[in-house]
Image (tube, rainbow, N blue to C red):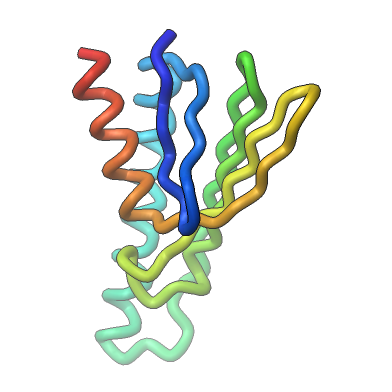
Length: 115
């Protein structure tokens, strides 16, 4: 299994992650991006209260436990969105924020290298 490196607002974390799990995460983030774009579009068209969209709550359990959370209803665009990342195992727990667009780049780069 390859190492996925996620760049955080300060620093980065690397951990074992399968390409299949990365593709699943990529799909879920793609849905989140569509929600963010729909919210931004509704606001630009003058809607005061766009339709609320579901949050991204991704969980992965392997060598480590990874949780990624993002509420699209609080960001004006995909470029402003941040995700909360929790990575833990039985010895350590790291919780940090990361820019959504940077996480998308990290996953794309990982999948290119894994191919």
